[in-house]
Length: 245
Image (cartoon, rainbow, N blue to C red; front, side):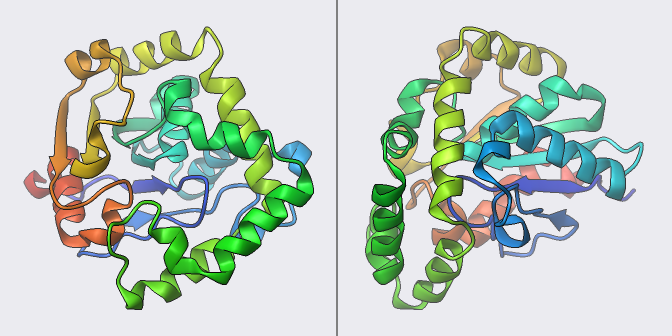
C-alpha cells in the first residue's frame, strides 16, 4: 500500500529541506516565501498560511488525508490547519513547533522591530550565514554555507515581521491551546525534538501525555534536519508509520 502524501511546513526562515531518503514528500513555500515573496505583508499571517495550504491540498491531493510535518512556526501552522480542516489530515509530526509564547521569544523580538531594524538584521544574517546557523548549531560545517545562504534569500524582512507578529498574536490568544487540545483528540500527534533544544521547548504536560509518541534525537538541536538528516528522516518514517505500509 502506498503511504499517504507528506506535506512539510517550514518555519520562520527558509525552506524545509529534508534529505536522507524521504520519498513522497512535498514542501510548498508559504505566503511571503520563495515564489510568493511579493505577497504584501498585510496578507501574511498564520491563518492566511492555513488557507494557502488548504488550497494547495485541494489542488494537489483532492479528497486525500495527508500527513503533516511542521517545523518550528510551521508546527503551529500544521496544528492550526488540522484544527480548521481535520478531514484533510491523517497524522501530524510537530517538530519543535510553537505551543506557547515561551516558544515565540525570537518571534516576539522580530515583531517589535521596525522595518529598518528587520532589514538590518536579515542583511547581517546574509552577510555571514554560518554565524546565523551558529545560533542553532554548535559547529556549522563549511559546506552548509550554501544551504544557509539559500534559506536566508527565500524571504524579505517584511515577511519575517508579519509572520512574527502573527505568531505572537495567535499563540498568545486564549483559544490557542484549547484548539491544540482538539487536534490531539482528533489526530495522532507525534512530538520530535533535538537533544540540545529539547529542554527549551515549552510543551505543556497534557500534550506529552496526549501525544501518540515522541522522540528526542541525540547530537542535534532545532535544525536537526540539517545536522542529522538521515536520523531525522528515519524518525519521521517511524512516526508516520511509513515503514509499515
